[in-house]
Amino acid sequence: MSGDNSHAAKHWLVTRFTSLALIPLCLWLFYSLAGVAGGDQPLVQLWLKAPAHAGVLGLFLLVGFHHSASGVQEVIEDYISSENVKKLALAANRLLHLAAFGAALAAVLSLALKG
Amino acid sequence: MADTQKRPLSPHLQIYRLPLPALLSITHRMTGMALSVGLFVLAAWLYAAAFSPKCFAKFHELFNTGLGRFALFGWMLAFFYHFCAGIRHLVWDTGTGLSKSAYRISNWIVIFSALLLTAGAWLYARGGLQ
Image (cartoon, rainbow over all chains, first blue to last red; front, top):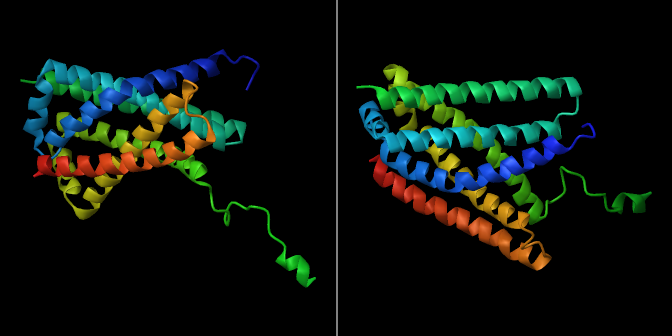
């Protein structure tokens, strides 16, 4: 770590804000998934056809993936000592989270806009 | 010589019984990692729902096996634990509940509310899944 701590403080704050936002978002997601997860594909599509559902799910994905990436980042920083491996792991973490978020968001948009 | 063998060892990670707060702390991290994996599974499930009916059917099949149910239950338990312990972290961040006595009580509040929420949610979700 260099002497510049501003990004560490920002990381700390962002983790708190995403945590707070995730309290209602996760409860909503659980409530929704309990009704939908056992169903078939048309049921999932019907669920996401409502713009409010698709919108809140998109918001959950944004905040959830951010929170997840931030948590995994913290674990990598704490347990990997080799600087090179750490750099690689941090980059891979970001890339994987970004890719999965993109794929999930594309799926939600596609389901919301289909037919 | 015989005496030296009876000397207590310093706490070593493999044989050291973690105090409850330490155990809850590492559990928060481990459930967080498990939930990250779960988030990727959720993303894959959504992706399958939108773009691959075949893959979606496979998901459906998998979630209905014993192992699939077990995994879902595990994620649910991990979620509610992380949820409760996370809220306690947010309370701590405001500077409250940091005394030893408050700590002792909140340890058990976190454990019991996580178990209770999981049990309630599981019963609720079972109704939805059938």
